[in-house]
Image (cartoon, rainbow, N blue to C red; front, side, top):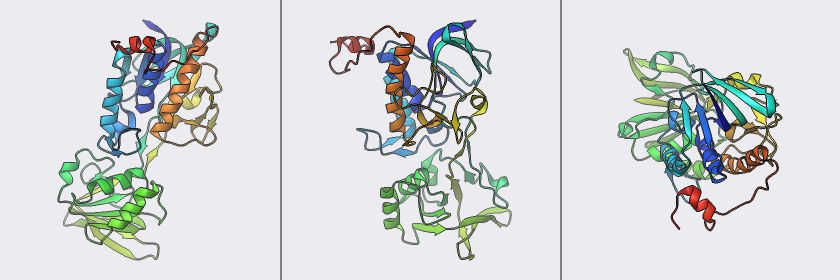
Length: 341
């Protein structure tokens, strides 16, 4: 059976979930498709315990906690989720609508589509040093699932972005020792995080290395740590119980790349008024889109979702005036949110 709807959101990460909320305020019901078996996107799949410090009004919030809060926020709008399935086809049909099909055989007839698929079918960039492969998912990991298991351990963190620095700071004082390894002195993380990290470096509880990983150290068929080569060519042997690699994600748009969008480095170009793609009726929010001045922040995705919602409403009802109403005072907004006045 084909599901007829006003909008299908592709992607159930934070931007996709907040998109449900913004559409719901405008009385637009959403269907959400995601290739993962749970909502949350990268936050839930790769770093559910990662601390997030730049969500408004939340000084610190775990990634999974943020997802849980978003799910609570969208409850009044009763979105329908189609998880564990990938969108395989998107094609225009009569009346300016779209036919959308998934790998599970679900088919939609929809007026609009919102792409909130993050980096697409993402995979962590792997450590390919000599001897690393046999230790993957044993002592070499690409996410931290249970920080409590790292208490009292010697760990190595590879990376220079926000995830690497956030976890370094979060685990400092809990792990016995942390060695942060980045290929160069310049970091991509927030300057405040880098400054705090450097203030904690003492050569014991926290070490900072610049260089690249050459090989895994084998100690009588047991994992012994990593061999690291610094910029001067000197070799260092760093003992560790666990290694965590935060080198970012290797993006793969999959079928999306074949749907006729204007692309720039595997991201979809949009305008900054509607966040519409070059295909009328198809919008893109979050990390999957690009425009002049784009910043890959969850906060940016939330802003984009708000404007895209109004654009979707205008697209579906072109003859109706779009009115901005405030959730604080509008009886209509309160009704849609299920709030008793």
